[in-house]
Image (cartoon, rainbow, N blue to C red; front, top):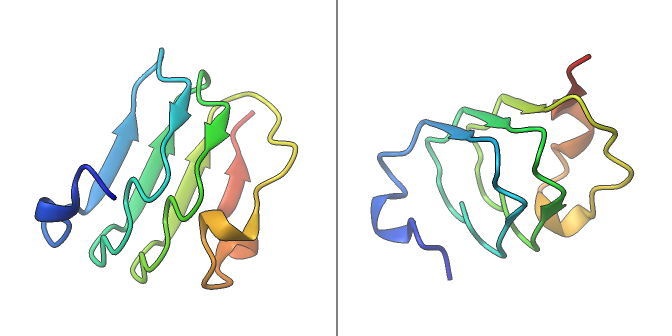
Length: 88
């Protein structure tokens, strides 16, 4: 389960700092008020259902590295194609 589940209604923005390599399964599952996520360059892996049911998510920004593929299960509500942006 999500390590932040108890606080899911309070989370609006997430910034993953440099040095973090992966984000686990269901990390932000049902964080309904999450609007913005910034991932450091070091992040290489997003677990299953990482952003599932984050219905308010408007911005998902990756670091300066190429993202080869993002599985539908990371964000299964069909919003993925609209949100991903690689910062150059």
